[in-house]
Image: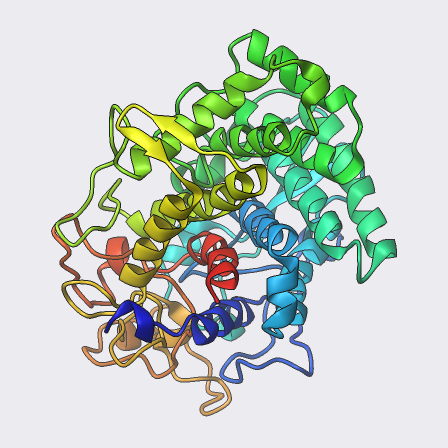
Amino acid sequence: MSFALVDYKTALDNSLLYYEAQRSGSLPTNQRVQWRGDSGLQDGKDARIDLMGGYYDAGDNVKFGFPMAFTITMLSWGVVDFYERFNRTAQLSNALEAIKWGTDYLIKAHPKSDVLYGEVGDGNSDHACWQRPEDMTTPRTTFKIDDEHPGADLAGETAAALAAASIAFNATDPTYASKLRDHAVKLFEFAYNHPGHYQDSIPVVAKFYSSTEYMDEVLWAATWLFRATHKWNLIDFLDNALARGETGGKRSVFSWDDKYLGPQVIVAKLILDGTLADYNGTLNGYKDQAEEFICSCIQKGSNNIRRTPGGLLWWAPWDNLQFVTSATFVLTVYSDYLAAAKASINCSGGVIQPSDLIAFAQTQVDYILGVNPKNLSYMVGFGTKFPSQVHHRGASIVSIKKDPAPITCKGGFDWFNKNEPNPNVVSGAIVGGPDDNDAYNDSRSNYQQAEPAIANTAPLVGVLARLV
């Protein structure tokens, strides 16, 4: 497969289709992924609140609010920056629907200013079973943060998601956009006034999505709220954080857990486009830090990100592609920020032009889509060769539409242990990906490489829209 043969348009359609496969709740009449059915219809019942909807996290049946909110932020960022490209490719409505399925849930999860539900279901009991979401028999316990049980990271990330989404909806649904902004403002205030890690309030999440720091999410929320509201006190907050050395410094990764690069990149954009001209360069530290990361990705920095022999950026053996898609998104948007400002980056290894960034980003996308030593697409359902034994409960068990007989907790492992392709293709899912030598073991039990997560695909959606 050559670069010219990579069909970004089909990949974009698939990437948005993936979110329909991950839907929880009562499915709409225009649902395209037909092997799924309604599920989680009693979510929130234990707390006497409606928490139907939202997304299952990966190959499991838990709704983790922290990575879900990051997913919505990244989907929204893609739409905000590449709105017209989504429109031209007739994917804008699908992208907005993917965002809204998440934001509708996040709004429900925020019933009061200082209350936010951060999880539905329990990872331990869920992972002990292998069932279609339609058959779940595991507890659907709800977990929350509140005034006495804080979580600035969870509240901050959710504020960022709703603020970013409000911009995405401004043109098509200003009333909904206003509602999203209102929730975002209250959640930012909640995060700002209640520092602390959310896993201290929701200990059951610690094994799965523990948060390392919380200041990155608060900064992330502030930058998105500024883009959504243009309230200058938020820039003062960011300026003060830089003066106190709280902006993260040079980062080596951008992910659902480490968001520092996000505020750095957005502030850099606001510097490049002249929005922050009145600050007389006091915020340049954000831009410098963002560009150090970019230089390292493009192999022109002082401490470059490792690459596999086939050219893929490499961070970790567990779900490496989550880091690749997020970094690739940053390179893509920054290319456009630089081009609009007629600017370049002075890396220690040489000057980088906007065209260099988009060209490098394209190499990463093409690798993911099959231009790699194995000629294997790591986007499920794309191309002629892709992972067939994806670690995904719903995809690995016969559809409830074909066989409505309930699958028991332990009975599902009969499907898990089958050494054959999944009966359902979870199109658009980005799996964990190859190892550091470009090798991939297509086995359902290989959760490090074969499990997809909603946060893996979200950054790639925007990149694909830019490349179409």
